[in-house]
Amino acid sequence: MDTKHQEIQDYYGKELESSDDLKTNACCTLVPPPKHIKEVLSQIHDEVHAKYYGCGLTIPYELEGMRILDLGSGSGRDCYIASKLVGQDGYVVGVDMTDEQLDVANKYIDYHTEAFGYKHSNVKFVKGNIEKLDELNLEDGSFDIIISNCVINLANDKSKVLEDAYRLLKPGGEIYFSDVYSDRRIPQLLQDDPVLWGECLSGAMYWNDFHKAAKDAGFTDPRTMENKVITVENEALQEKLGDIKFFSVTYRLFKLEGLELDCEDYGQAIRYRGTIEGKSTSFSLDDHHYFQKGKIESVCGNTYMMLKDTRFEKHFDFFGDFSTHYGIFEGCGGAMPFSIDASQEDGSCC
Image (cartoon, rainbow, N blue to C red; front, side):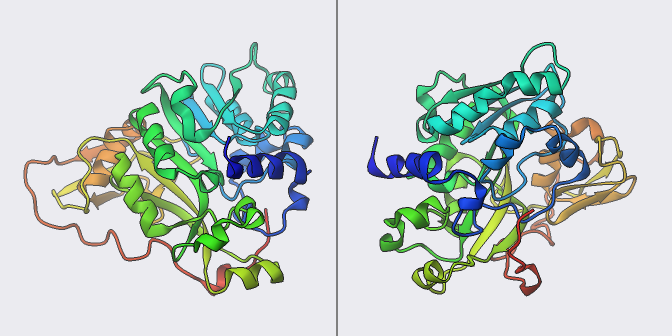
């Protein structure tokens, strides 16, 4: 084990007793969960809650019967939420390398099995490094969804994590995850600071480097779900970081053959049926694709595929095909995929 991995294990296994011990608000969820997640959270054991260090919401919609992998599952909070939402016929695997976190997660398997009214557990936890998923006997193409909550930034080889995630997903599957990103590359001196790395700051990827790594791994069109400005709220650490700005961002990356680098216009449209549980009036594919029930909306070819060639197909009507190309699709894209909004800078956790 290299020094950085040992430092991470010590930080999350020994130095941090609970989220109250964090020195910044980077590993802190700034967005309140939707109603159906709140209902499940009320059933999660208090100790599992106390050792949660996530920075976003990593549980997408339409999970019934899904097989889910959680990268860096920690005390198991997100795994147990997913366990409830996939149902008895779904399955959840959590991977983490810190013994103390795994001990907490494993301690409450029976507790949550009973709380959810299951006949048998549908979750298991595996000790492993998310940079070495190929050593964990996980079958290629065996997961519908991969989630991760403020952990990939802690990896040295983030490209390897994304490449393995692509390999493990089924066609049409997705990685849906929250993490910390920066508006520029982090200097090596800051990357070598164990506290800043453990606090999920100096391991943050410059957003444009992340987009390149995601596309190189096969995730051609990364989609932003939500983003929040991170306010460090620690004077000494902020002085070290200088003018670097950080963001908590949730992305969804689909494993789909044929996605294009740009949003292209094929004259296609979709209509949402309003049938996704918990989203009866509207559904957001990402932060700039919002579909109201019954309204026909023009979409680019990539968005068309993200709905038609995935688990969402049964919830939409589709119009058009790929037979005629009309050029670039207006309304998608932009420069930086998230921006600084002073109104977001409240810095408080949910």
